[in-house]
Length: 204
Image 1 (tube, rainbow, N blue to C red):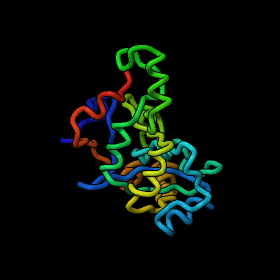
Image 2: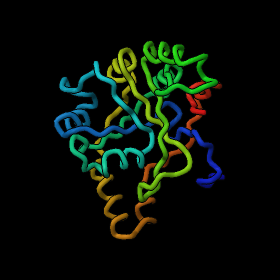
Image 3: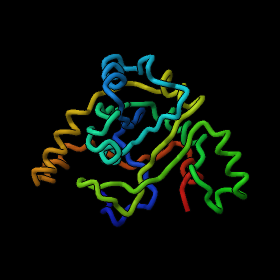
Image 4: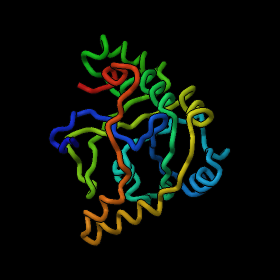
């Protein structure tokens, strides 16, 4: 049975997924997003040496990109990646700020953050009106080895979902939230194959 919003854990990764893959979202300017969706890989203009943030939550991406209208984020992408790659990133990630109990001290956290190829940030999940919810959605930052693996090994497909973003938003603006919800991706709780892989990246 599906849990209500109030029953969900504070930290929960939800994604559209299959047995082998899951979907994360990003938004780019058209000069990057359009060829990425066309070719199924990022173009040369995509800077693999910069940190890139992936978000399993469609609605959090809508909040971040203002429904695909924000400057530099007008092409919204659904990037299907391997579960194996996603789990590697989680297993090699560090939370983006110091959390007592997860780290021996701030110096230990800073050293882990410096070395980690992935960075975890938890932000309030959003409802259909983009209002914050009590539980958190994952943002996963990839840099160095993780960014290269993402671009070269993990991506299965890239789909331009900008039109979907605009259609959902149109229903919301017209006061048809139920119609908007019916268009949303079916995001279900992500269960890693390695027990405890997400426990070390949760905030206090």
